[in-house]
Length: 194
Image (tube, rainbow, N blue to C red; front, side):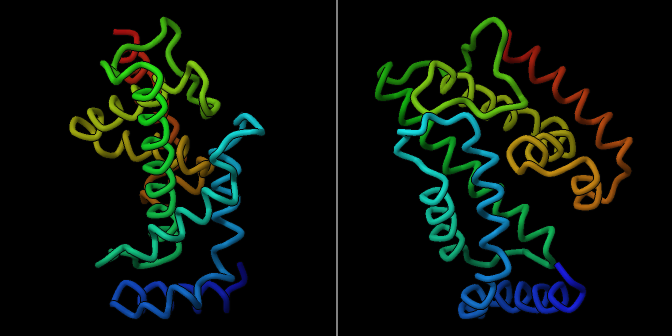
């Protein structure tokens, strides 16, 4: 994004956060590409016949974004952090529905011995849906203990952001991001293995 576009984007974000509902419509050309990138990251490895396709995920995220009230977005990074959180919630809700439909609910904290792969999103309808839900539950627990480490995982894993982008959003160095990433991954794996 060019400097002039960044300034306009930030102005529109602030207008939207201030209650200007038309500002979100004017943001469309700025964010659609980024939402598709996030969606492709999330949907990597999905079954091609999945009912939740990349475009559908983008559209669902857009609808939920349009319903957000009192967004605390100050700039581009805050906005895309919000988008990543919305997409995470959509995918977690879908995974929970798959688990409930297949197993009649149950304890989502139980995981396979190896635990979920933090480098890919489980395929829709796969046996890893339970791991995905367990990861979300463990991440929510980690956020209670160490919010920054949980945010690093959310931004990198769910948001598909680089180490540098994550550091920029959190206001920490790349080294701190990597340290938090390693420690949080270890904690999550230990929790998921029970």
